[in-house]
Length: 217
Image (cartoon, rainbow, N blue to C red; front, side):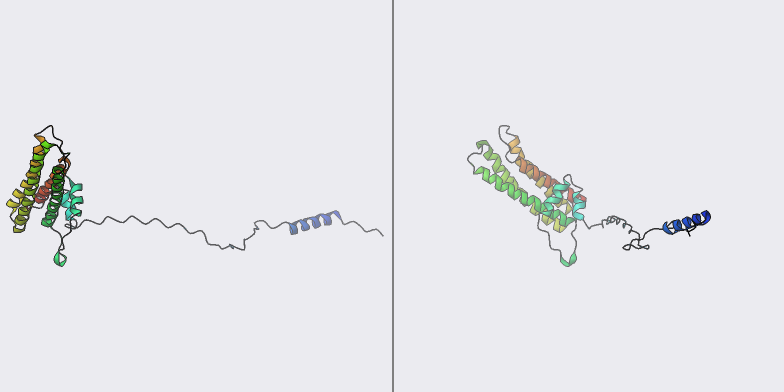
């Protein structure tokens, strides 16, 4: 006998049954073995730390800077003082206005010594203009007077004599001008001490300004 074909309704149901077994259910997905379904989300970047707040300046903590800012040449004031040997203060004592003034005076003294050496070298140089020999001698004498006046100002400062301190510091400034005048009176002469005198004048001016700001004159 020949086999009977399945009824049409049965064949249709069989086809639907096979289709549902082969197609994956809706919403099915593959899960990576490495990460897993419960992998942690990426870490959030940490916020950048806030910039540190500026530390307020304690009165007297930077007295050199505060006094130099009272001068006409604050940068020169601070740089020249920083080059001087710093005093060793006993018992943790802090630098005061008089100490800053002494450092500024030391800067003038050191620069005057350099100027004296330069003027002496020019006197011994055969290439120096003969007409400049007299003014150069005057400069050396002025620088000697300057050193003496600084010494007197230092003594007056130690004694608390403000009037004499101011007078001696004024004399220091005048000594620098005296050196310049010898060359200014002769237009034919090169101002071979001009640069050094200009710096000395600024340093002497700083001393006067510091003394005034610190109440020492």
